[in-house]
Length: 114
Length: 113
Image (cartoon, rainbow over all chains, first blue to last red; front, side, top):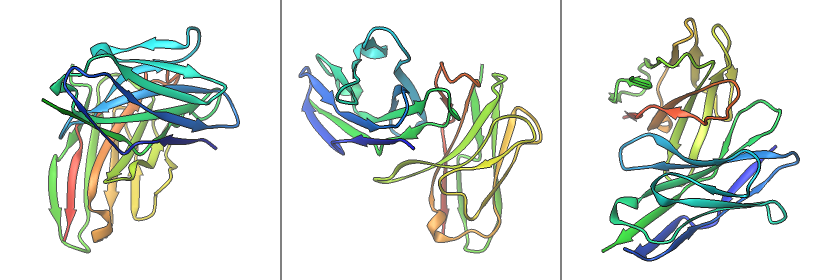
């Protein structure tokens, strides 16, 4: 079984500041890793994913994430946030070669202040 | 190019009433899922389907039933609604390989009074 821990339930930050949203996972097998974003009153959208290869993954809207196998982490970063980045962010893992059913973290609310 | 469409978007039910939520996708995806989202709980899987005519239980299946009679549709039923089922329900679909991630619908906000 897998588990995903998003270490911060809420991250307040000022506009144009850098941000890091933390995600740690636990799994007995190798996993695929995803970040999703949910804007208010909308469904989730895929932000980026790690399947294999380079551990630094770039996604949409200037976000990137780095897979660290030894620390079982997949932290999401952006060097300069905008007001429009205010949203809920979810980390998810899917076991390789398994049922393809993802496990989601509980989400991190990013609040960008002007 | 609609993606995943959920109907209705909002609904208020009285305790004990029944209803069906409809999810339709036009991407020929094999896998479909129903999640509920509650504050501080993230997304929890209710039921899922790996193909037409198949269904399986997720993490929180009690009180819900599903059907996948057509590949493009996945129905979620509440036979006797309870206040604990007040939530936002999301449908999602994916290809069998999962490499492209999920496509989510915009959600159904259900209130049971």
